[in-house]
Length: 237
Image (cartoon, rainbow, N blue to C red):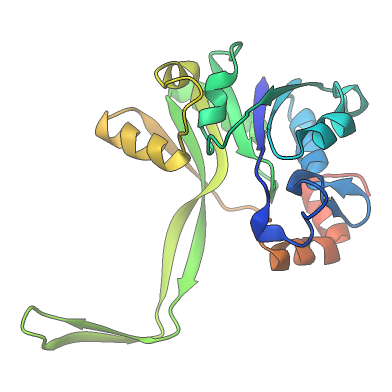
């Protein structure tokens, strides 16, 4: 099984932690980097080949991970010279297998990546998206009214539930082969084009642990609770 990790972002939302080092190399608990944890999890789930799509401070990431032998996997690299968003970098990889896993390099979760991949293959989906339910709380009284401006309903500080993308996908190679090489193309484009073209996109709900380390508060929480998280994630202390 092959996994491709998007590790080329500048991590601007995570400053000042990312001023000198790329976001995927930011350490947790003074032990492992975020990307290191992800690769160890993938190895535990049977993924033997990991490709890192890199850009910003790529030389540091490549020097740190090398060929992957230290982590028991084969690691190679795809270098993007410009910003290609989340899916565009895949068009630069010439040896994609028929199906592969793609994920962001700043995610901590206890998803069984092997099961997710095998479900994607069994369903013969073109794209599978791991989804997580998030609650959004509105801190205001919400007014609803008709075309005449008359109040029809009122909710005081309501909460809404949404299924959001976790940043973990499985993709069939044919999807990428249909895209222009080296062009900017995001996950939003993938979803909207898939809907327009009526492609088979499977949503796989997940209810375990998931944390997107995109903001300083999220990183601080993960760093402060590293021992607890490492147990959930199956990572050595």
